[in-house]
Length: 141
Picture 1: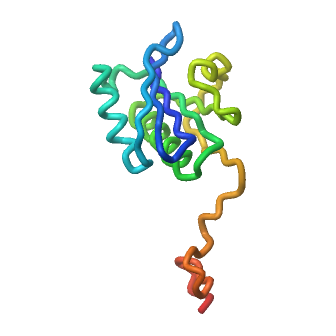
Picture 2: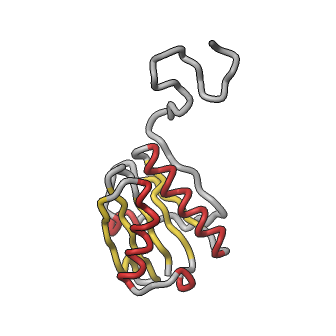
């Protein structure tokens, strides 16, 4: 059984369980990225599934919210590494529902996936509008 994660919107994450017959369970939880792990635990408890029953991971890598994409791919990569199984990354530019997206799923399993963005991330620019100093860069005043 494979766990599916999809978090293209920063306000929610969707979990799914997929077996050889297709998508068996699906649940969307309204939460910010810092709540993804707690939502995952609650969802697995509700479905009465333990991590030891999982055989793989499928994660929607984006495009979507930078933070949601980074956090969901990090969770997928971490669980896959810890449990010793592969992960499949799927891009969903049309934001299809999981049932439709999984029908198009590639079979390429890897050891890790990277998030997909629809524009370059701006994670090193100063948000304060002050001196323009980048955190950790002591070369500017």
